[in-house]
Length: 318
Image 1 (cartoon, rainbow, N blue to C red):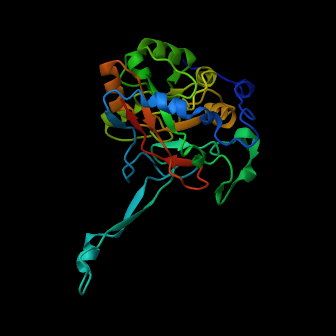
Image 2: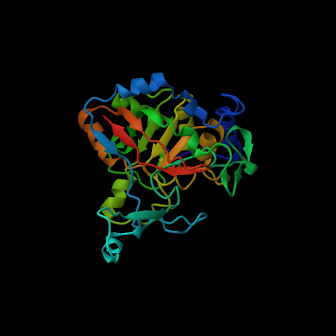
């Protein structure tokens, strides 16, 4: 359900769920502090069959990015620095062993990815009260994605909103609020609690594949989470929330005064990491088939010093 918010209402929600100082003045990982050995061990016991599911989109030149918008994000550009032809063309006596090499030019948030807490600012502040001075041309000095290099692992819970609503996919502008999340969880027999990673399926990637083109998937109007979903996510102390859409928030936004209002509440204030463009289709089919919607999840970022986001290959194991 869509809601309409003023700037004052978004700021009130942000203040209500603010976790600044909860884990100390030096904290840089937010609710990822709740990931501990005990929770990881419990999550590992969720592996029943050993079936792994990759939740990543391919990183290649046919991805969703258009090169337009504020950042001008483009798709991954993969190049060979040395290929088989180079080996074959080498003159003279070659040793028995030779090899190929490659490189990539990549916007770190061009595909399946995490937003770091350093990714979003509101009022020129990011999580835990840090300022724009903490993200320089050399990268993030605080709140970088590397803070969760050993914390993006634990219990994942899929909330299949599209299936719950009885549709193949939600349409652009369709919003998912706390009541939707709660009822979906209840219908699945799923509980969501502290330290969990919540994956929300809108079915938008199924729509993209059905029409055979990305269209305005990256940057256009989209189904997504209402700012009201903060009540569900923040009250339960989840570590992170990820969706199959480009920007998590429902678009058009529910506020004409605040850009990406749920990013403001979750990333800037609550310290909850955000995942975007996760491919949940195969996992969702399996969950529907066996009636179990929780699993062991590993979604560790690349350890790129100072990065404000990271591509990743999340693996769900059932």
